[in-house]
Amino acid sequence: MSLRLATFNVENLMNRFDFSGYRNQLNEDRTLALFDIQSEAEYKMLEQARAISQSDDTRQLTALAIAATRADIICMQEVDNIEALKAFEYGYLFKMVGQGYRQKYTTAGNDTRGIDVAVMMRSETAEGQPIEFVRMTSHAHVTFEQFGLFTPELATLGYQAIERIFRRDCLEVDLKIGGAPLTLYLVHFKSMGSPRNGLDGREATMPLRVAEAQAVRRIIEERFGKDHAADKRWAICGDMNDYRQRVKIEGDIVDGYRFQVIDESQSCINVLTAGGFCENVVERRPEMDRWSFYHTRGPEERHLCQLDYILLSKGLAAKNATAVPDIVRNGQPWRTIFPAGQEVERFPRAGWDRPKASDHCPVVIALDMA
Image (cartoon, rainbow, N blue to C red; front, side):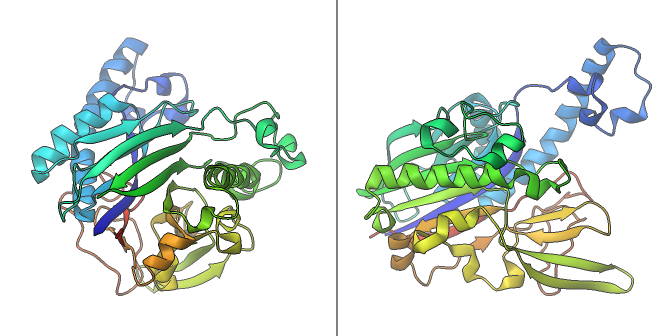
């Protein structure tokens, strides 16, 4: 009994317009910055036209990336609401691919922009086993104080003990696959952001991601029992905005690119994998071929890294010891630098940096659920 499980940050799957760029240049699209716009009303009209025209190509590519996973269940990040998800699934996935995802679930989390985690599921697996929804539990309300996770480092960054831990949510979804239980934990951890307090963006936000990881582990241990949790059937899926390795890129297209694998001394992922609690199954792939995201801030700061994870419980990972995840990179924009031998045929109409399926790549694994 096989199940294909995927995760994908679809990036801003919205059904509303963002007009904040009129007053905040940091949020203004570069297209509108070219024009002399005289009023907020004119800005709103142009922003609506821009967003609609660009969204169609983007969502076609997003749908192609999801279709390429052939997933029975796909965990998603940056979904506006259930209405946006339904419109996307019916208008793009179903109409383009001819086979949709009838079951869709999400709930409002803590993100100030309103982008949440969600899950879409087929009614049955490709082998015909029923996929049954049992229940869904949000943990968006949990605070640092409740879990005893408030630290001096968090205080230094301006957080308070009474604040909620998760920047979005840890959404717990209980399922049955052909009668066999499976619990998914959908997450989207704090983004790295800009430098602050003399630290780079990753270092400055690390204490919050560590707290999120600690909270996820505690939720799982309390659910299944600390001594038995690792042996149960569960998976943590999502964009964790952190990595244990990165592939540093130097050089240019003329003289050639050079790639160097760099191990990181600290990562929130270590909190979850410590003691064999779960396994980052993407690390079954070669070191140079684990990346799901291309990061750049100019030629002096370029690297490939894994931000998107399927972490399997120790028991589920052991049962699927030979399963190696796939990473779908065909929807990447042309600006993404691929190591030699990893190049893929991009989806039609992918642009230099947009349109694109996402800056993230879907990650998918076939699991034996017997």
